[in-house]
Amino acid sequence: MELKISDRGIEMPQSPIRKLAPLAYEAQDRGVKIYRLNIGQPDLPTPQKALDVLKNIDRKTLEYSPSQGYRSLREALVGYYERYQIKLKPDEIIITAGGSEAVLFAFMSCLNPGDEIIVPEPAYANYMSFAISAGAVIRAVTTTIEEGFCLPKVEKFEELINERTKAILICNPNNPTGYLYTQKEMNRIRDLVKKYNLYLFSDEVYREFIYTGSPYISAMHLEGIEQNVVLIDSVSKRYSECGIRIGALITKNEAVRNTVMKFCQARLSPPLLGQLVAEASIEGTEQYSREVYDEYVERRKCLIDGVNRIPGCYTPVPMGAFYTVAKLPVDDAEKFCAWCLSDFCYKDDNTPEGCAGETVMMAPAAGFYSDPSLGRDQVRLAYVLCKHDLQRALFVLDKALEAYNSGK
Image (cartoon, rainbow, N blue to C red):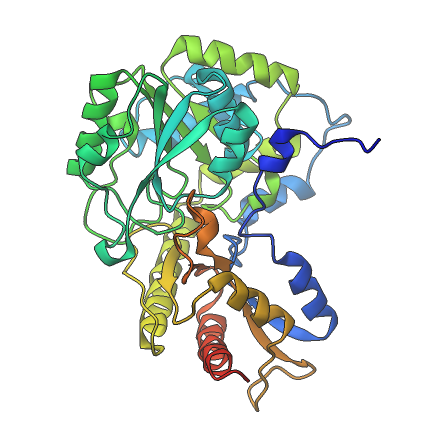
């Protein structure tokens, strides 16, 4: 008799960000240069100060750290959050293996199997995976590209609230849309959380990347729901340190922290080397952060202007993070994205020497919605490449759409 896979494993979706990776590897093997707009992996260097820590480790043993992370790192983070008028104590911060573990531990600690989380969509695809891991259910409030992905009216949330509803989850600034929630929208979320006594999970890993005069409103700024808020954070994006896997779960709710610590103890400790790098990145890197921010401002303009110049394409202007969701003139963006890697290869006099040709890799946006019928003609694009590469990627995308729609 054949062994069966778990229902949870069958239900777990593939990542729209990584599911086309096998096709990308095959294209690479054929000598094709791929412009990777699919994943939020910045090409900017990690702060030299942080790299030097790795080069000069003088420890004799690479030991376990405390399950909640080193106190010195948590103390440094207290100072970091103070810059954003978020007042914390070290014990209110728990270090995790990336923001991903923080989300998973938040779900596992606050939700029972069958409990529901309301999430504005499109949303970071792994939220669905973490919910399935915890036995929780995502209920989507859909935002639209035509309205710039702004938050729907309160009534749309209240239509979904029932006895199983336990939380609202937001990402601000948003991945995948780059949308930045306004003070009015955050107040509406606060009022819902208060009225129905819900948890508010707030993923705020992109707070450094806000391109408007509007203020950054953290869930931690909202008065009257201090015990309801669980903040998710990560150093991956702001210091180009995706590989060190250091994040944080932050809450003033002691019962939640005590429960999260049980899961932290079960996985023993967060990454030792990652914590050393993260701590070194927090202080004395202000100039680095300013330069990174200025670079993303330029990249955003390059990508958004470029996409909207391609016939049939449209994207609103994102006000935060380094992503945008774009509408393409195709019926099925996933098929188009796969075709770009498996069948398409563009070459001209500007193609880098030694390349068989060039193509683009994008994340099909349908994977960022619970309803697979939504986002079928959309992709998420990450402007994490230098301007020269972004310009070339957009040129190649234009050529790919032209070839695809002409049946070539």
